[in-house]
Amino acid sequence: MAAASVRDIMTTDVLSFGPEDGVHDAMQAMVDRDVDGVPVVDDDGKVIGVLSNGDLIVRESKLHFPTLVSILGASFEIKHKDFDEDLGKALGSFVREVMSHPARTCGVDATVEEAATLMHEHDVARLPVVDADGRLVGIVSRGDIIRGMLGSS
Image 1 (cartoon, one colour):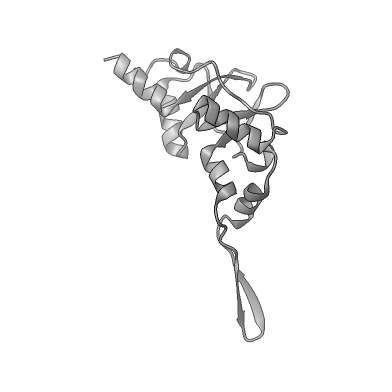
Image 2: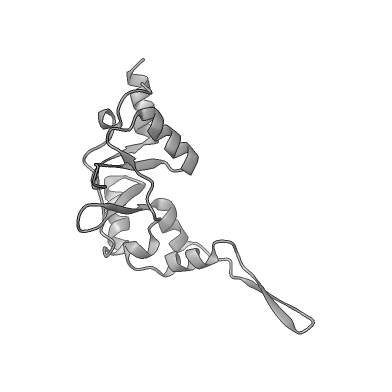
C-alpha cells in the first residue's frame, strides 16, 4: 500500500472555502458536511491555508493574556507563546483571519507513504492534494490512509 498513489485513496468531493468567506458560515458548512478540516483556496483554486476545528475552537476559548511584571520600576511582559495568533483567531470574522497557513499539501502523484510521513512530521490530520500548479484536486486524511491499508490486505 505504501507505494500506492494518493490519487487512489483521496476524496475528490472536497468542501473548500475562500479567504473572504465568513467564519460562521464556514463553521455551519463543516458541521453540515461532518468534516473537521477544509482547504482554503484563492480565486485560482490554489491552496493557501486550511481551516480546522482547532482553529475554530480557539475562537470560542478563553485567552491567556500576557502578564506584566514590574521589577525595580521596569516592566516586563511575559507573553503566552501563541497569544497574538490566538487573539487574531478569536476576533476573526473571515476565514483568512482564523485559518492555519501555509497549508501543508501533497501532490496528486505522492505515495501514500509520503503523505503519511508528511502528516506525521507536521502533526496534521489531513492534507489537501494539489496538481502541479498548486490547485486543489482532493484531500487525503488519516482515515483514508488507514482505509487504504485495510483494503490492501
